[in-house]
Length: 174
Image 1 (cartoon, rainbow, N blue to C red):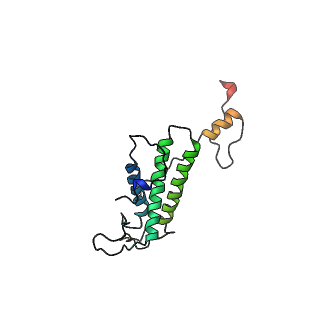
Image 2: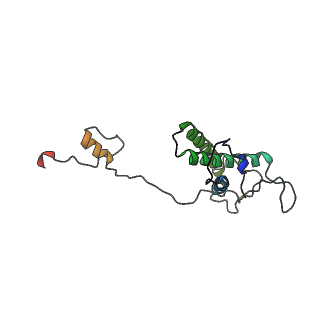
Image 3: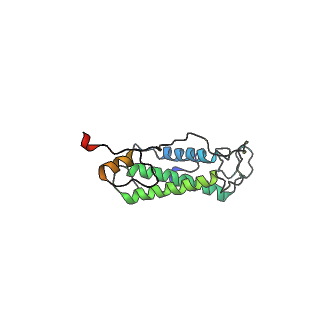
């Protein structure tokens, strides 16, 4: 169940091509939202006006449901715009797509980190530790030889905070 519809995408009359499925972008955005908010709340959220099982009004207030829908629209639209504009060099369109994604991600991180609560949403049963879980990827290198290489080849000093681990070679002894 997606949090928005294809007709709600913020792409105007942008041609997307026959092979591009707008619904896939909407569904992927919904899954991404669930991956962020699922740390604190049971997902998927119901954004209907009434609870289909009871017929009672939805416990999640309308303004919160609209906010979740807007986040879904921004994520799906931004990712679709970047996918369509990837082959071209239209920097303005790509900047618009990036801004939509960044705004949505900031809102999701605020929800995930507890800065913004989803009223009426069912919290996860175990709320003792709500830190995000998943793979942690670190691509840093504590002993990078890049700075030493540039010092050796250009004569400039490496950045003060990085250690110089590459000793200069004896050029005369070659």
